[in-house]
Image (cartoon, rainbow, N blue to C red; front, side):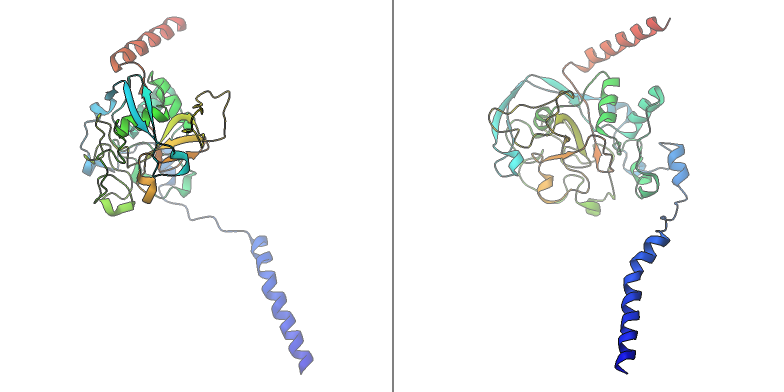
Length: 312
């Protein structure tokens, strides 16, 4: 009887230990295909009405830039993480920055004009991609090189970390664009409780506007900036790195909160980082320029005419 029990026990053990091997040999099932998968790859911006119920910004105004005046401002925070310390005074020359995050409408114009690749996730894993595609919602699933190329096409560039923080924070060291209090949902963050399942059309939250008129710095999407990520950048003697030929790390910096951000990630002094080629539904961007929009347009027109003449 005892011998029979040992045999039964041994068979049971062998069966249980073989299950992982059976699973490996069998392989895993692919996720079920979404009926919209092919449609996502066929067209970047189908007319499905997403975001139209809250469209409050005229598409013609999406190109607006605001001027950030020259002068001192407080950079960093002593209340934040290690990479935000110490808070200190910096000085910048005047510059211009996009009033809104770059939208699907604008990015589609770029694609149509240049043939640049479509923004998109690994196809079938983008469960919310359709809901992110309204014309005045900010474009998502763009890498750092995608963002930089778009800005260059516009005759602009990505803002530096310092430019982004001053434009969104102002000069007085506040924690959020509207001040220091965090009550209710003044920006699009923390999931669906603010009324938006994913991103909101740009400019949907009046309180999420800086003293210079820059919208959606605290919410909607995290944003690529020009800098390579340096953890102790704010320590005396450290230098920002914008040159691709001498990167100090493998990461590019992102600033601002996104529609899924919570807790300390909501502070506009928070510094995030990611590999440049990464694309995600929580990351977007806006552009900046050292010149006024009028001069940028003139330079862009001149450049286009020169290219036209060379093609003849």
